[in-house]
Image 1 (tube, rainbow, N blue to C red):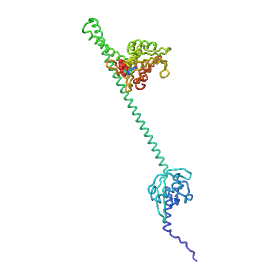
Image 2 (image 1 turned 60 degrees about the vertical axis):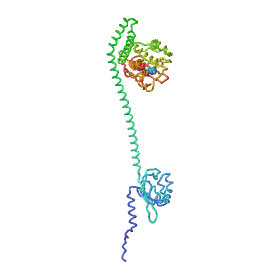
Image 3 (image 1 turned 45 degrees about the vertical axis):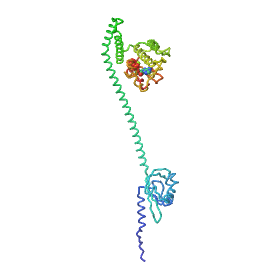
Image 4 (image 1 turned 60 degrees about the horizontal axis):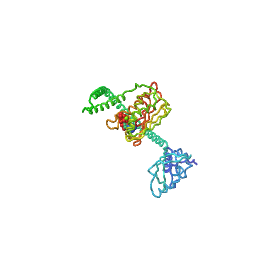
Length: 418
Ligand SMILES: Nc1ncnc2c1ncn2[C@@H]1O[C@H](COP(=O)(O)OP(=O)(O)OP(=O)(O)O)[C@@H](O)[C@H]1O
Ligand SMILES: [Mg+2]
């Protein structure tokens, strides 16, 4: 009998389709998992094996919920039941980002798209799963960079604002400086003619009989000329720097001396003077005349602030300047009208005054500050409307040889420290 040659049957259409389907599944980069209506896994391709760490045989027949973390794991059957009952699609044909769980329990983000099919009358759901861990990380990184960028932009904006404010301050200071120089040169020009006028007036008045009808007018001219002369010398004083005559100054004694000078004014206004002087205050090295001017300006301001009386407290203490420099501090406190908040930042500006015309030139405090700075000291001012003002002058015991602080002593006055 002739041997039977084995006949190879051509593959059926079904076999062909299945082979193509298998090849497709094996080649797919994304995980492909199909489930039946009960949620049981039917197919689990190699990409899904790599992604989840399960072998296909381990998971086929198992509920797909094993690929999900809680709480989706517990809810998944309900999702399918709801879809089967209502036809309401949440993922099918839409696709969305969800989280999945590997065999080792780690959770990772995936993009899932689900398609529905019918095979032999049975409903089948095919899910295509893409691991988007890297994309998510990149997104988070991008978000972080964006936030960082926003923070930097905000910081830059703040710095810009700061620079703008500083520029304005510098501009203001430059304006004041040129104003001061201009005023000083005008004052200089006015000094001589004013002095001559005063001399002439004194001469005329001396020779004029007491009952002369012009006497009163000339006296008024003399008084006003004296006022002009005072303003001019204050301006010059303000513009002039250095040239100090240093000596040993007993601060307590100087204060007492100046109070004596303005005693009549204090008495007239009903101002009570309270002394709180440190008895063992060490003497300081300073220009006595300039210091007298500082105290006089401050006492006059305090007296002017208490037109209806009040209390003037004068306090001295040992103190320190930055860098542990031994110093004395002098406080002049009044219970006067105080300074409005909007004026506090301007009281050290030349020509700033709230006093009636002819009453103040607005040079007192700028001169005080200039003198204190020339002595490498500090001056600060605090004030509250209706309660009073406290000015503190701190001066070093000794003047440093090279005066590094001159002209740039801490600007504690004005708005910064008031
Ligand atoms: N102790 C104080 N109480 C209330 N306000 C004060 C006091 N000291 C200063 N001021 C305010 O500061 C302004 C400036 O003072 P500053 O001494 O520079 O000038 P002035 O007193 O007005 O004039 P000048 O001192 O040149 O005669 C005053 O006009 C006043 O408004
Ligand atoms: Mg004054």
